[in-house]
Length: 244
Image 1: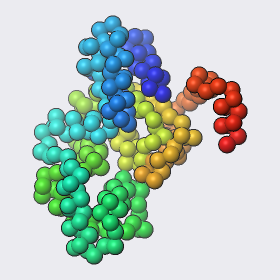
Image 2: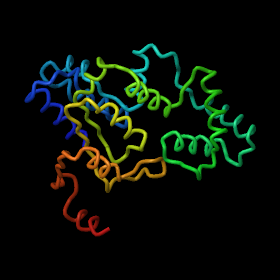
Image 3: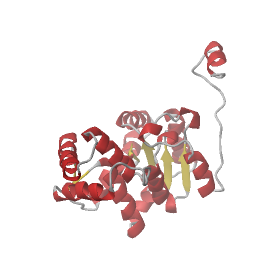
Image 4: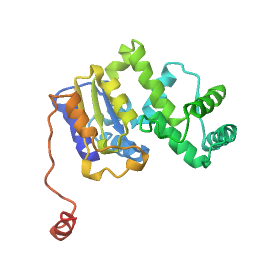
């Protein structure tokens, strides 16, 4: 999929003459982002293109946007989050482990958990208040704060950065990441996502293969391109895998 995303970027740059500074490509891992930069640097003027084009994870891009806006924060490390989670569990006598509390809180922030969440609104607010007293944010907060920024303020300079928005591994996004894509893409001239709903395996952490259906509903003009040729697997592998 990364190769397909790079091909799309090259098409925007070479065929449509789009400025690199008007393209943002979202990946799920820093390794994938570095791979894309490395490949783009092999193009003519690749060093300049790679520097101007925004490539990164959701959290990396959000962190840079908030930092450029002068936001005063740091991303809480695991130790701090576990300490605050422990205090919250004790304060509200929750029957949860620290890791379970943080996992459930993340699902709550992403809009996945509802009334059935074992983390109450009061407990979540208490944890968040302590986090803010430390001038810290967690990874979900990075996305929430950035989305709020795009919805509440006139940030036309950064809107140019998302004139063309590309998202890799779309099947892995959660509802909060989808809402962030909508906020980033509100003024885009083109949104390009690549993914495979059959490869959606991260439901336990909030991903939802129905994001493809939601995208079609939100963008009726959406065009779907199916890559039907398999270049990786031998016929023997496919003949076994497809029935499964």
